[in-house]
Image (tube, rainbow, N blue to C red; front, side, top):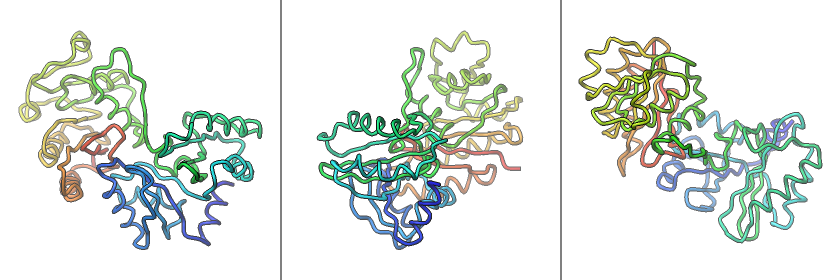
Length: 344
């Protein structure tokens, strides 16, 4: 029912959308949206990296269009269906209870550009109302989302299916708990990529980690049941050195690949090098990737001309791979993560 109502409304009016990007790439993200909708108009920046935009495109179609053009910098979107005074927020949501599917889970996500709003207190108040109305409220992996962005005086309010928002985390801020044996924060990038690109990694098999030191990505892959060949002249963390399912090849990637006899189910690459050079390594590595194998890599971006660099690099990769997706993830900094599948 929620989808039908949103699409019906979108037919008769321009839609307003809040989009979120890394502050460093906010203008690039805006350009991506304007590529999709030449008539779009930025209304205002609500906060660093968070923009309110008016579109001719219905919100319900926007996520699919973003995926189609492989937009890399739009991290999260949510609709604005109503603008209300903060004190009227409770009643505004109560008036729309009938929109929600009671059989599906629902989450309330609140962001703000002011410290005057106690988001936790406000969320608890709204959640209590929704539960009392018989709705299934769950913060983790919700099917439906109530998105709220608060300023000092007003709230931007919208309802959507989680898949339409590009991420089911508020603002695309996908957070992971720190683990006792965690090696590096780089692990979060790989974990986020697996979720954002909805990758189905094999439950067992052999993975190749290019530029593996100190071994954060290797640890993630081992935790998922894969054996790993870790290629790097540098050391791996001590916690990995006694693992019989990790083979550490102390070579440069360019030295390792020509003599490699193994075939891999998955290849990952978080090497710090120029994007085109990293792509050339991945092209060479495609010869040791099994048919239908997956690959995940990061591209370290320059301060200027990022779109040109990404376009040039993906054009190279497409000679050997299908590019599944490209995204500046929450745990990326001056980089994007690319998901690949070996092309036949």
